[in-house]
Structure formats: C-alpha cells, structure tokens
Image (cartoon, rainbow, N blue to C red; front, side, top):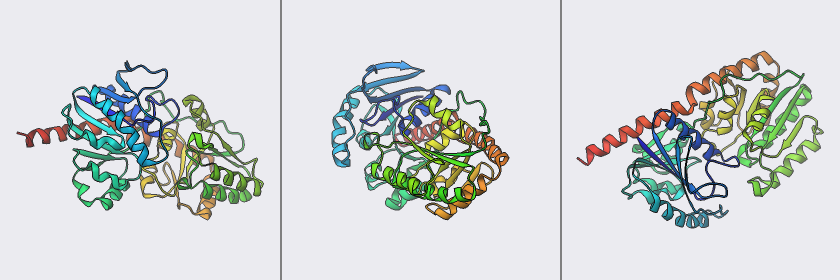
Length: 377
C-alpha cells in the first residue's frame, strides 16, 4: 500500500527540536515501513534537509514552508501557499493522510484513493471543514466524544486510533540506581492546562511529611521555545516561598533524545498533572518504553495511559490535596514503584507500539478503500 502524509507548514520533519506530533508521526511512518508499506512524507524545507530523499525507507518530499504565527487565522492563511506547493508535487497513493489545518483542501485531489485527517489536539469548530473526507482520526475516545458534541453528524467518519511510540532500541525497562531519594519527573510544556501549579503545590505539602522525595520539571521556559514565561515565574516563586529549592528544580527543554532518556532513567516516577487539553500524551508513552511508574491526572483523555495499581495511579485533576496524598503513597514503597515501571513497559509495548498502531491504521485504510470502490462501482 502507498501511503502519503502531508504535514503542516511550520516545522521540519524529521523533527529537529522536540515536536510531539512530528515525533509521533515519525514513529508511525517507521512502523508502516516495517510492516511492508511505501511511505512518503510532504513537509517544509529546512536548512540541512534535502528537497527529496529516502531515509530509513521513508520518501521525504519538501517544499518551502512558513514559520508559525501566533494568530491562528494568519497562520492558516500563511500556510495556503505551502499547501499549493505540496499539491503540485503530490504523487499517486492509496491513502493521503493529512496533519494540517488546511487538510480539507485536499478533498477533491485525484492523486489518492482516500483522504483522511487526524486531530492531534482537542477538537475545535474547524472540523466542520473536514466532513467531506473519508475518515477523521483521533488519539483517544474522549477526543472523539468532544468532536461529536461539536458536530453530531461526524459520528460516521470519526475513529479512535491511539497515539504510538517507537519501542525500537528499548528492549527492556530500566531501573534507576537507588540514592536514598524517590525522584519524580515532569516532562512537557509549562502551561496552565498542564496543571503544573497544582503539582508543585501538592509536592510542597508532601515534602513536609516525606523529605526524601524530589521533583524535576523539564520543559520550555522562554516564549521563543513555546513556554509561558509568566507561569514559569509563578512556579519559581512557589518553590522559593516554600523553601523547597533543594527538592524541586525546573530545567529547560532537552531536545537530544539520548540525554532526555537519561533523565527519565534517573527518575522513579513520571508525573502528568494535566487539567485539560490532552489527547493521548506522547511524553508518557515515551516514558513507558523506559519502564517508569506513572502518576497522572484522571482526565478522561488520560484513562488509556494507566492501569490503576498495575502501571501507576491516577490523581484527581487540579486537586492539590490529592497530589500530596498520592505522592506520599507512591513514594512509600520503592519495590511497588519498580513493579509499576516493569508493567508500564509491557503494557506500552503491547498497546502503543508503532507496529501495532500502524497495523490498526492499515486495516482501516483497506476497509475504507474497499467501501469507496464498492460505492463507485
């Protein structure tokens, strides 16, 4: 099967600096190649990248893009010339998989048998534009439900397929060398919807009862990196006022995969305190393949990530007291933490590996193609 991906006009591919969506798509593309399919990716041209090349079995076709604009309307408009350039380069395929706001413009193209779109964030009203496509994919059942509330008639074309992560080179869970502290780590954006304030407040309370715990928060700090500088200052103030700078540290983002993996390996528990805005968190999937216990908020979108008391525990989203109690409970038993980590690795490999998810997509692609050919006689 020939499968083409069209990515947005803002970020290079493969990703140079983070980029959760592009990291997800790189894993998915590799998964599709590994099970025998031809994959082409259309993405923005960037310094150091060729206009056309084949890398690890993936054909890359790149055209001039544009930097991201803060205003969503302006950003959409600025992306249209990029879309037109992609259209001029499109090759025939069985599937055209769109991952950009302008994806509905590919509806009438004659280069692909079916055209699909994927919602990578919480759904917005713009999904009305995608109702003519053959399929809309989402990363969790909760996002599908939210989309149906916006557009009830979307029910017949929307489908949940979980996000995936590449387990290649991650053959077993990694235990941390014990150093007397139970170390928690948060990896992600410092934004209001990530709930980092409730996490820090809960941790400050937990330290009073257990001084042998530490927390490291890793994420973008400056606005140029995508951070919320006002929130960062609030986090620093909380740490200073509570006198816990020896227990809680804030670090800039780590884009080098190997270095980030070292940080995860040196932790005991991975936390996700989100209070909104989630689909299926990529950082948590990436930590699963290293085999770490999980402590995450109980948002509906987070439910597939944890098997309660098997791979980790849920915390009441945004509830400071709940974070305090769960942090204390979790840190009381290192053997339990290590067992959670082993189970998280096995669960993630079985449920979210790129090969598994790629196969799920292919089965649905084949179904859609067969149905379309039947309708067209």
